[in-house]
Length: 415
Ligand code: ASP
Ligand code: MG
Image (cartoon, rainbow, N blue to C red):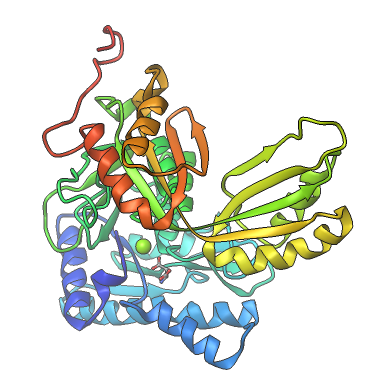
């Protein structure tokens, strides 16, 4: 059971989480619970660091950030003990979560869950501080924003849990952000592949890495509300998803930036140099477009998108490459967004891309970049146009409460 920041924001909510954990224990289940930092604690810790330094040391940053989830766990353990059960809180390190050494975005390498197993065998409820681990050089690390989801999935895999329940402030995964689309539908089941595309397209319900981890280790996720009992959304293997909707959801993000390198020499190795520099600076490049010059000797243009937070780092990383390759300029468009439609059913249905472009054209929205996967179509557009685009696509593909179009079951003829 994993409880997010809003579900443990204050004493009352922590006690509610404690009761929920105890209720599961009283049903006879062994419970490992992962807690996030309370409310906006992590943001506040980031601000504290910024008051101290413009460029805080990443190792110290992790020492600082990891405290938020420890507070939640210790407090929750106290509440559980008062409810007549025995709980033990553990840091990520004590829980055996071993990561690489890349501070503030560490990756889990191994989970040595012996201590958790022993505690469960003794009848204890185990609380683990989310979002953190210990590196191979014995330093505290954190797993990137939203990382408690990944902690939960990794522990679920390690203890071979029946299910990894993610308790949050929404009732599940929706066909679009309900704040933008009032008739967005709660989805009962989503496949790992669809959820991966949605998370990488801006859906914030689950951290992208947690979904990757769940897919790789076959961990069933149940994403549900901590404020009500109704089931939420199951994220499971494709073989378990019963009906294949043509389109499952519209995802969006409003914090993209586009960088264009103008006048890039058209020679082997140019792209390799550019994107190696960006990778070394840990910039998460999303879409890439390169246009090949028509005339011999002319220069090319290379454009790509990064999260807006990475713009400074990208520009800095590219300075030496601009000089080395004699690139004319870097143009930055900081206010970009992205809309994506995701659905396993589109694999076998032509014409989905054409319809997406038509819908955006009717809204007079200009598409700057396009990328596709077998189950996703993404368009980069101006950030300000994202809400209009999301609403238009959601209604054009009839994703609202009554509009779901299911495909015939596998083996029967498609619609
Ligand atoms: N507290 C961390 C964050 O705010 C990790 C998490 O909540 O998942 O990003
Ligand atoms: Mg979260």
